[in-house]
Image (cartoon, rainbow, N blue to C red):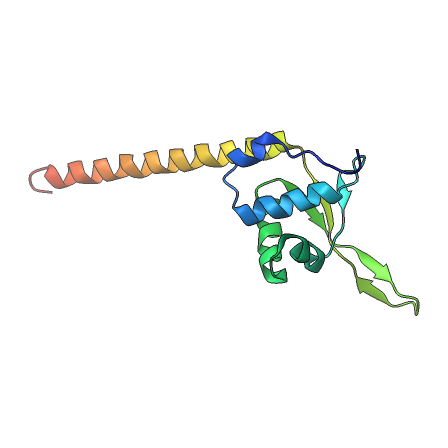
Length: 132
């Protein structure tokens, strides 16, 4: 079981870019199956998925925004006793939470569009009134 990992089918229904899917899949590959955590560097992720560090940073931020992962900063203590920033700790969240976030955002977008149409119709009706 250490030579493969699963990727939820629902990942393809969340509107992710190919790069976001690649980064998510790589994090799934590395995650500890008990804690759902891993902590590769941006450079390590980039080398694995063929993307630059800055691009990986954008993908990581997008995955966090979409509720697929949580990130936490870590620190390390060097041999000389100096505290330095470590890699991010990634926690992969349950896919159903990301799906709920996705659907809530879709619903909100539909509601905003409907409200804009309602206001537009009202404004158009006001333009048709005589003396307006």
